[in-house]
Amino acid sequence: MFATETISPKGKVVKHYRTQNVKTPLACLAQLAVKNLVGFKAGVTLTGLLAQTDLAAAQAMQKAKAELFAMFNKPKVKLRL
Picture 1 (cartoon, rainbow, N blue to C red):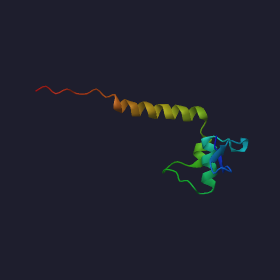
Picture 2 (cartoon, rainbow, N blue to C red):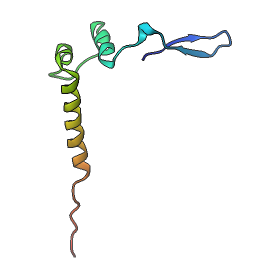
Picture 3 (cartoon, rainbow, N blue to C red):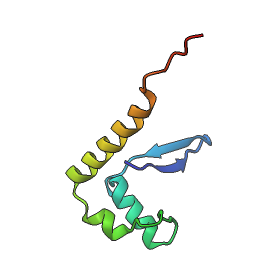
């Protein structure tokens, strides 16, 4: 959900969550890409992201996380003096 910020009569910022502003992160990214407000890494396109299913995206993210955390859990080599 993305908030619409307005200023109250007291001068405070009030956030309103309206139904027309409810979007998925991918939908918001697509809107920004159409307006040329966002760039993609080499080899990544908006059509490629839109064609990917939710399940495939989740599996790719889990695989990337597992590879990342595997780097942290490498066994440490003890040196004997």
